[in-house]
Image (cartoon, rainbow over all chains, first blue to last red; front, side, top):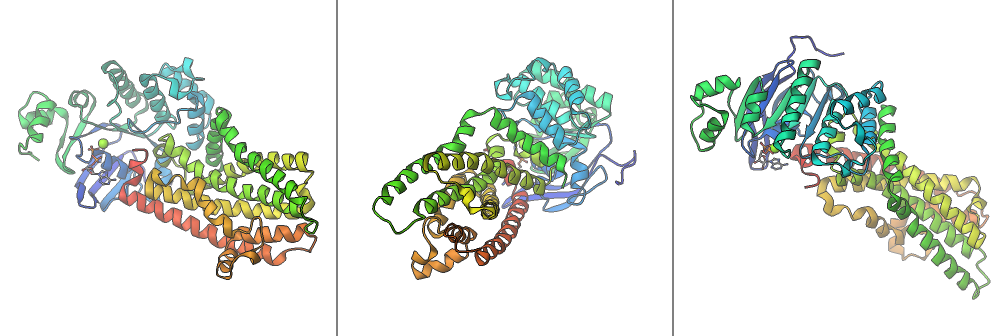
Length: 251
Length: 263
Ligand SMILES: Nc1ncnc2c1ncn2[C@@H]1O[C@H](COP(=O)(O)OP(=O)(O)O)[C@@H](O)[C@H]1O
Ligand SMILES: [Mg+2]
């Protein structure tokens, strides 16, 4: 049913642009995400990270350019793509009046999960929220909520996990736990992860490769190591500040 | 159309309403108050006339059926609004759920809301005033079907407006329909309207339903013309509402509106 071979990139983007009125939010981006890698989209606020990820999920229609996810395109491949990827963001929530179980049960149905009960139990055990299954999501701590959102994002055993600033509202301990979970998901399930963040240390620790964008444009792409070497800096944070203050990009 | 996904979304509302007593009561509050007030008003007025034998039936039948239309429309609109309020819209849009499935689920929810409220209003009308809407026979169901359809169209249209104009438009979900009420011939025939308003009435499916209802209550035969007009108009409006919703969704994706919901 699809064009997916092991060699097909998880995501392929060519010449992608998005204009909102006078704002060019994304400007001629091209990149490829390999299967099984953790790929970081790094940039300051307003750099175009959310817009980019939204075009990969058909939430925003590109002004120009091509998007291929798992070898398929929108709008024709929408259902096939979306049933095999998942998404979480600090900026979305789940219905707070529903319990953890109810929420996960509903999304299991939306994703057509075969054995919802077993799948949900496995996920809540893994995220240590099994005891809170009957609690309303609105009554959980923010750390627990984040874990419920992550559990939702793993319900369909996604081939690609899209995460928009997943740790932005977490305390350092929860953020670290979340990163550990992501790493193990990638290792155990071979999932591809696209993560956006403006937290340099996190990106350095987590990502196989990073796409550094500024004002919607690609500054550079490479492993954290390569980026540091090219700019001759000790940390990504320093690179980031250098670029943010108008330092020239070495693309 | 994937029925598993439609059922999943309906399950979401079932959970929501099961866990929320205020939402359940809100379903009954106004219909019950309306029927009680207008029922007694009618009984009082009846003391002054002897000519209109079906006064009570007209009124109660009108109230009960009007509420079918209203609940159906609110049911569809609020299904969308609930997702906006709970910041859940993006979760749905990144799932394989199709817009058509979302709409189908909203329609299913609307039917459940209509059923829940109507059982109670029918019962109250019978217990307090001895009026049984079942005197309309099979036509009761045909009328209800037409009103549910019209409610769906309006509900989808209003959901589209909320998608386009944001939450500022959400009061339309409870208000817009009352703009139509004066020309919907709920409590009086189209013939009492001034001439220039009558064509407007004729374009409203509900007006044909209420005209048909009075015809049936009068025992004046089968309202074939009215029913055909009502269902034909419903078909047109439903197609128009769906087209509007899909166009608005496509535009929302171009303008990035889906990302700004709830902000
Ligand atoms: N729906 C929208 N309408 C208009 N402008 C938008 C919209 N969404 C984003 N933008 C603009 O596009 C640019 C990129 O935004 P965004 O992708 O959210 O950046 P990031 O996620 O990197 O912070 C910003 O200048 C932002 O103001
Ligand atoms: Mg963002």
